[in-house]
Image (cartoon, rainbow, N blue to C red; front, side, top):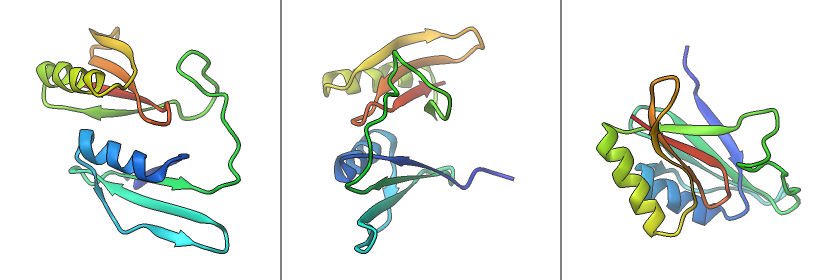
Length: 129
């Protein structure tokens, strides 16, 4: 058994799509649009077969979820890269491009080498090796 995909709501569908394509190598399908429900989405595919569905519609409510104030539910996505140098490299590229680095590269208590960044919608993303 495997997880087929994970879905997240976003405000800016195009900006989120570009983010995951640019920094994590996602390949997007064509945009799905349901005019009756005012719903739009993309499926973003990654090399290992995992997919992320990003979705939007105009009547969504703001979430109080943040890096500092976390609630029950899915809290982060983790992307694995080849090695620690790649963690450092991608973290610096994201920093240079203006994204928030919520956690500097480090060895975690459970043995990962990771950094934590926030995507354009302030979703928590771990970059791990």
